[in-house]
Image 1 (cartoon, rainbow, N blue to C red):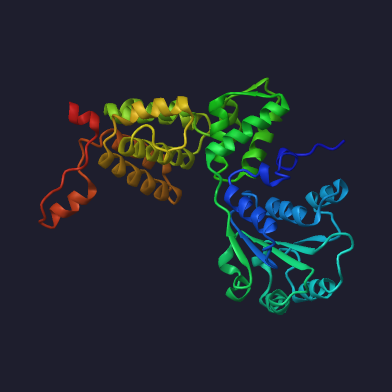
Image 2: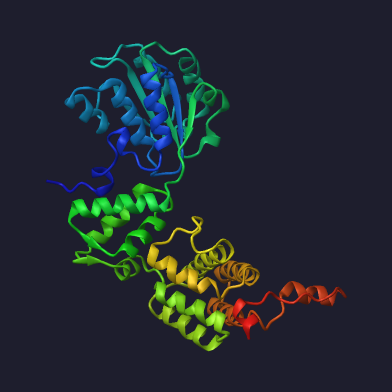
Length: 382
């Protein structure tokens, strides 16, 4: 049999299985119980957060009851729950066909439910054609519109829908789900790896599951962070940690050596700088809010390491570092000598407590009082 990817095999099939969107699931369940189901809904949110799955679960709760019907709805193949991809059916003729078919009563369910994915892709003419039907639809018809770009959905359409905004799924929730999936698949993995995948999902369960699928396909007996770094070409976390430690130690030599090692492993300058920005942001938040803050999503082991490291970073100096790295990242993309800018950045970060802030230099040339550059916590102790 053909292999079914994890994102399809482990997608939610019931309200109780929904991850990260529990408030919406509870509201829809209560609407059914109280007989307050609207004729049109608008599900908004980034990709992979459960909009289509929730639409199918909602439709199943309204029209299902028999195993055959439930399976067809969840597979997107039911005759009364019609799924339409607006990206490939965006014209006014498609909208008119939908309207014409809406007049016919459902074959075996209570309602005829139209799930329109990426509805913002419909043309203005198609939206206009749908408008009247959505305002006063036949009693057996219901619309569930899903979009990743609600700003492009006309206000006239939105005003006829009950809108639900799907939030990005927290990394901790994604990590818990991935752990359960790995257990069912009989695959062993490092806890830190699972959390790294969850963070790389950027709030999307589908993206995280797709990445996990790629890792499992590597055939490793135990999935590790190293496997992930090699697969995606990510900077080794330990080497980036060495870079950060060289900054607080005021050691430009080790900083350059660590940067060179990363480059020799095939990691691009842009990726290294992006990782630096992310790690510096974590250190900034930990130094400011404490090691237990929920503003930083890390595994327990990584949190202990980063919390200890953050004690060496002064918040003001860290803000200065983030701004510097972001500026170099933009400049390096358009430079004929990106390596020189990269090396200069690492040296500058390692000498943050010794060199004047560029803003201070500009002020001095204008006759304004000079403001010292922010210094690291480590330099204060020296």
